[in-house]
Image 1 (cartoon, chains in turn blue, brown):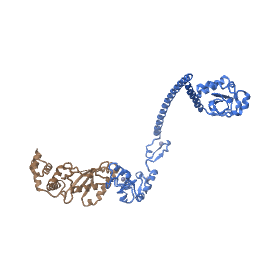
Image 2 (image 1 turned 45 degrees about the vertical axis):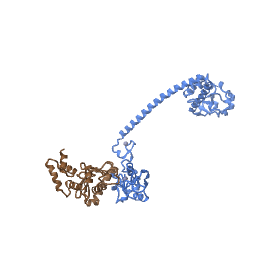
Image 3 (image 1 turned 135 degrees about the horizontal axis):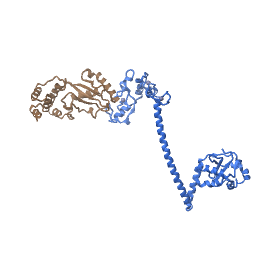
Image 4 (image 1 turned 90 degrees about the horizontal axis):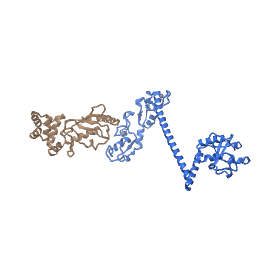
Amino acid sequence: MGFDLARFQGTVDEELICSICSGVLEHPVQAPSCEHAFCSACINEWLSRQPTCPVDRTPITSSELQPVPRILKNLLARLTISCDNAHCGCTELMKLEVLSSHVDFCEHNPKRPVLCELGCGLVIPKDDLKEHNCVKELRAYVTTQEKKLSEFHDELIEQQITLSEVRRELSFVKEFLRAMRSSHPAMRAIAEQFEKDEVKRWANTLTKARVSRWGAMISTPDDVLQSLIKRSLSESGCPVHIMEELMRNCHERKWPAGLASLQTRQRQRREYDNYVCRRIPGKQAVLALACDNPHMAEDLMTEPGLVMIFALGIE
Amino acid sequence: MANIAAQRIKREFKEVIKSEEVAKCAIKVELVSDSYTELKGEIAGPPDTPYEGGNFVLEIKVPETYPFNPPKVRFLTKIWHPNISSVTGAICLDILKDQWAAAMTLRTVLLSLQALLSAAEPDDPQDAVVAKQYKDAPDMFRLTARHWTAAYAGGPYSNPEFDSKIRRLADMGIESHDARVALSSFNWDLERATEQLFS
Ligand SMILES: [Zn+2]
Ligand SMILES: [Zn+2]
Ligand SMILES: [Zn+2]
């Protein structure tokens, strides 16, 4: 709908008036052959009822409407109009072409978003400021947040339930695979792949670690230390099928030749920096898993990997 | 009332008031309600027609969807015309129906109605009885229409013969308007009108 004629300074040429709304043309378009101009909104509303020019009834459709000539646009742009917010106290007069950019920033715009300066920090439309009550608004805000929080909480519980169900089912599947493996060769391959993937997935959850003092390696950990390490492995989600073996590989009697004696260890120390190690959470101990270390020489690695416990020097 | 309708009517109201037809007293429009939803129109009977000298009052109701839909117009002044109901004042005119266009105004509507008084369209009637008379007994139609103009619209030409027939029926206790309708419908045949009124 066009602009109210009363908002303009001086007289407005008849040519610039929409014959549908009788206001000054807003976003004008024209009919293709008769060239009658209308506000875009006005003519489209009319064409949705009847596909003819409202002035002379020439048949037209919405898609045939055309932009108006530049001269008409220029005439419109140069008209002087009062602000949309004149009723709210804005006394500015401006060219029609800058009206919309003025209105966006007009300080009399009753809907302009302003920051409440009383301390609540909420951004509210200016005309709400008078009625605004920080405590009330904040309380409403807290209530909605609480509601969201409790929704999240419920969701979390549900997820946990689902997760534990999935875990339980997964352990059944693992049992089943183990039982099948011994009797069926194809099954064995699948199960092995499955277990390998499981180890990789778990390994990726552990952070990489660097050993700075290979000399501080404890090659004969006692039972107490071993059980501490084992608990940490178990808590980190270590797959059950490799846990016992890994723990067995924490003692020099089980280590491969390249690690087996103090002499070889002193000799090969530089090689050890090539190990990809993962931290056993919370402990001065690392894992060198076979799947992380295919590049290591045969006498430096064993399946499924090595547990190396240190007195200090793990980063 | 929708903004656009109010804006239009305010402007059209001024347009009619400033128009030269108003200066010549041919058309007139007045507000009935402050909201511009209802207006009262007036048109002068065109010269050289049976309506000459009469003033015809119209009820104009502006719909919420104006100007995308036409105003609803009917004659409040009783009139004898093939395209206007002699009973309700309803008008059969294409621009008030499917031929309405959004650029038309109160002024164009009033002028179109005036033109309708000058040139009836009996093939598209609103009042079948009047239309039949218009075609079959044009002289009788003219006299009747002029008589109605005098009786209801302040027209100057009274018809003593018609007046006396109405008085005869009035003496029998018939309302003068009912008597006029009956007599007009039977080409002023007193006997047939009486028969119809008492049947
Ligand atoms: Zn418009
Ligand atoms: Zn402003
Ligand atoms: Zn506040």
